[in-house]
Image 1 (cartoon, rainbow, N blue to C red):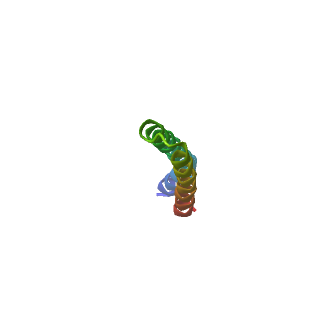
Image 2: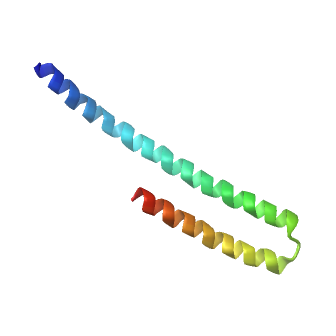
Image 3: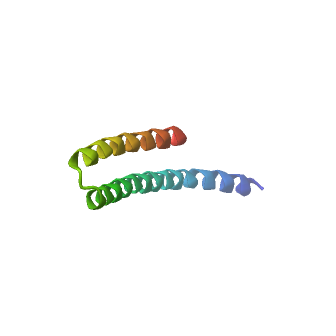
Length: 78
């Protein structure tokens, strides 16, 4: 009976690093998602919009949008 208690405690101790490992992968995936989203939208803008002033304005709004996505993601995790 005593060994079962130690087995549960040992499992809890060994589970902690894997929990941090999963969070680290989640942060990497979300950061690559933001990079992929940003580069894809910039490519679409440069391909379909030819007015440089309009592209510049949309790129500024895109950067603000990325900051908002980042803020909401951090609020979700923290």
